[in-house]
Amino acid sequence: MTEFTLPPALEEGDKVAVMATSAGIKDRFPAAFERGIKRLERRFGLEPVIYDTAEEDSEYLNSNPEEKAEEFMEAFEDPDIKAVVPVTGGDEELRILKYLDPENLEANPTRFYGISDNTNLHVYLWNLGIQSFYAGQIVPDLMSEGEVGEYTYEYLEKAFFEDALGTVKASNQFTDEFVNIQAEEINDDRSRYENSGWEFWNFNQQTVEGRLFGGCFEIMDFHMATQKYLPEREELEGAVLALETSEEAPSETTVKRGLMCLGENGMLRKFSAILIGRPIRTPLHGEERTEKEKQQYHRDQNERIKKEVKRYTPDTPVVFDMDFGHTDPKIPLQLGGKVVIQPHKRQIRFP
Image 1 (cartoon, rainbow, N blue to C red):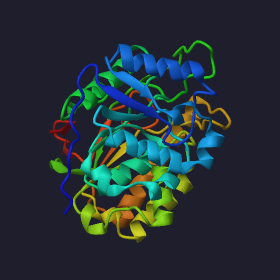
Image 2 (image 1 turned 90 degrees about the vertical axis):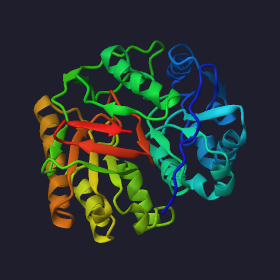
Image 3 (image 1 turned 45 degrees about the vertical axis):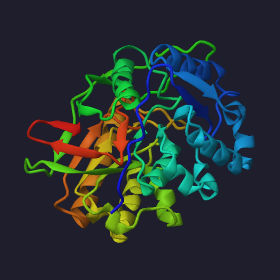
Image 4 (image 1 turned 60 degrees about the horizontal axis):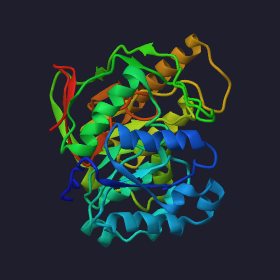
């Protein structure tokens, strides 16, 4: 089995590489870009080093996957760079993986952050035995304000400066709306909702632990299709799967099909437990939904997941509506790290 390494923790004043590992944002959302940079500096006391790709638009970046891979390698190989922070996600990061040098990455473990399309790099690093953190990119993770923002930043502070997240607990509030990052002045005026907590389903009160693997549901579909970068089945034996759906708010049918494929290829039954992130209930580019429609979408997605788990691995426990992924606030899940799920205490620990 793969031995896992946690890259060294950061210290205040350390340099972090800010780059485009997928799409670009600075040309489209300059105020959002600057806000994220300032938050790294002022909230966390880090020194952002802005790489060339962070200055480019998505059209250029999508035409030059080699350049994105080269910068990623440069950051890992530079002893002065202690972490890599992507500007955002996208849908073309898969194309950079073939240009990476696994031996040099393995020899120079560096902390990596991000969600969504950055799942591609999380999977790649997982195969090398390098732990990484599922949150922390410029957009949308560094945009929140108030109680929602502080929940994210307190856990992100641990992901930057400590060796473990410790015990994580459900937030008091959440939002699944979108910050207007096109505005000249960013204002987080999104609606907040009371968080009813996490649902521990199918546990029978037993403690479950394993090494965490996963990320964005839609990006996992990429890897199911390509079958080039997924870990060997035996490497996943006893691991804990983390999954969350993106701002596309996929249909119940799409979620069913993805889980069906994971079930049919034998992956789903390898996991000792599954963690499901709270879903965005209205697509970013779609028709608005009423509160009733949002709640129904949420229920339908959770029920579909339960049905597929019962079909393929009926003894596997699941935690629903966790604070990670595309909604806010979020926990930067420690991928590749050990996670302990204690349903009797209704808590989860990263020891």
